[in-house]
Image (cartoon, rainbow, N blue to C red; front, side):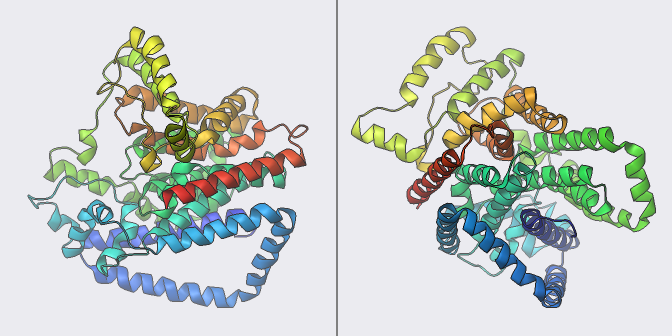
Length: 480
């Protein structure tokens, strides 16, 4: 699209392709004919090759952009490229057997159409499949490797989206530093190497924020349509999407209407009546067809979401959960924690657990928790978010809410509202901290506004970039 920066173009390209593939495959499943998916994907593949050939002269500009970028960030850029190459190789390794259990419902979808499947007595209620359905071809052809490439592409989209958003509040070196820090978050790195949908959900959420910024900066139909599609495409089998998708919708509505007014957007839509054809993918991405099927054929419209534990202790439970999630976010990464435990027989979790027992448990007890709180970071699974999340993203978000420009302040309020709602709605159980991945990663670009330009010198930027690269490196070593 005209006016794109390179980072915006890459992020848009990845998520737009994800949305197109998901739409095609969901249509195929609903109708019950896999041949539809095969034919339509073949058509768009040929069409894409033709477009690439037609605009081949622009390909050289991509390498020029990367070469110019490398010249100003040589060490960090080369290190990132090497790490990315390693991650790509890792995505083609054999997939763990446990991964295919996650795709049980897709393998059954393949055998029969959705509505025929809805009456199957041996099949559980359905979860949203906007992102899960992307992996369907690997099941169709019984592939044992390669599924992780989709997660790696989502990881790249997160990096480019973060950089593009950070550039709105900082110069290029600072934005690049922020992107490195976000891409070094341990949990994100691990998910980029192994098949799963969580990283795709985060990438789509960041895509929506980027689309919102682009739409409000230069009102146009393309960005507006992609924003709306992205907001509904956020809905996934990850329960957190049932909170952050509505929050992003309200945020986009407030930002767009406050900046240009509803009349301006109505005018754009009425001048381009063909845009209403996108109502079809919007309905598909909304998963309304799936929820209705759950309602008519299963016990609950919400499917497996109905098995989630909820907080029944109100504000007291929310306060206790807020503290629990903060403690779980305070994490120096698995390698360092394992090092201290092996060498000094000491873990950061021990003093934090003692502080929790003394100050929190004695006053709030187990309010808001489905079971007794025990601070474990599950280092073998790279559960948490590393030092970047707690020491940089959290302060940056609160600073943006207090001192940021109006648009960034609105984004900060939206994310803090998400943190509060998760603490209020869900009961704490081991593993629920994963609900905050979209919070820490999507809010990472706010660090660009947090770093003071007059103190964040070239030397400091370089040191921070090296620290981020080192964190990425040790995460790759541990995860492998």
